[in-house]
Image 1: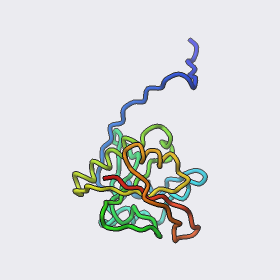
Image 2: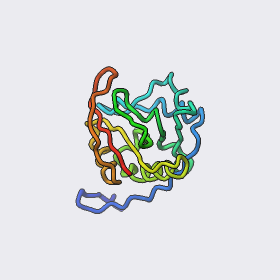
Image 3: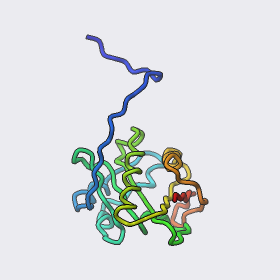
Image 4: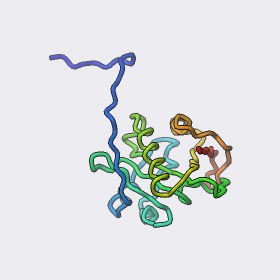
Length: 170
């Protein structure tokens, strides 16, 4: 029996993602703080000793599971913002992180859709804002695909300074 070879022109069927969300636990927080992203995406890395911030109630962090396996996290409010940006109180800020080994596998839309649903059902949000590094074209395209529009750009006020894009959706 020969192995099947997938060619770039052959359609790929992605398995639907059935995500669930729960309050971030100590085990989740410690795991997320060790995730490491390649190249320029390393700006999304956390410090392993800073895992407690994922448990601060005011930051509204949640673990995202697929078949009881930690695959991502989401947060709502203050900790989804980037230092140096302008954040009027007219929208709920949403942040997320997908486990590094899952990036680029088509899971982002299911994650963002779920976070938007939670923003409405849990926080009563009617407008949403996200801040994305300007080089992160995949995340920007994902946000645009679900109705976010660019509000503006700014340079972060933490070292090293980087350009970020603020997006909003009603």
